[in-house]
Image 1: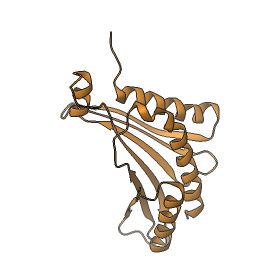
Image 2 (image 1 turned 90 degrees about the horizontal axis):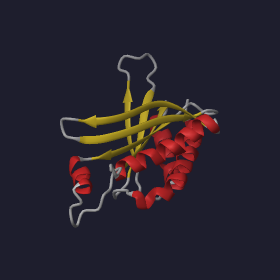
Image 3 (image 1 turned 45 degrees about the horizontal axis):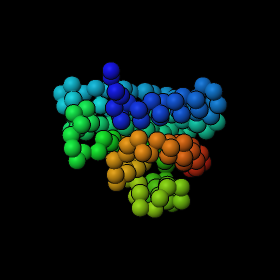
Length: 173
């Protein structure tokens, strides 16, 4: 009998929560979905992108990954290894006043998320545009792996993401 991995169980839990918010509650619109098996390194990646239905100025992305080492340790039941995955959250928005808005983004992130989860903001723009509009990708990396032990935290994590999207949408151009 096939026993799903921690990666599969977490993926399904995120899908269930987010698709319910999309199809049943109509609070979000899912805009992209990636479910990838990278044959070159034998890793797994699952990504869902979504935006608020009422406030589409910014969008969010949940990325769950598991390396070959993590998957093999679980499937082979290696002693001393705890099955887990890596979770990354990203928020995408456009800004015009880079310095001011990036400082505001940092304050928003610190208010909503744990202060020790320092966000990384990566700015890019289209060269040659008459009036540059900057794209800000805000990433939160958790300092630990997640497992099925955090399954109950998914509802709160998604709630924080929706709150973040609302606040970031208020800052956009």
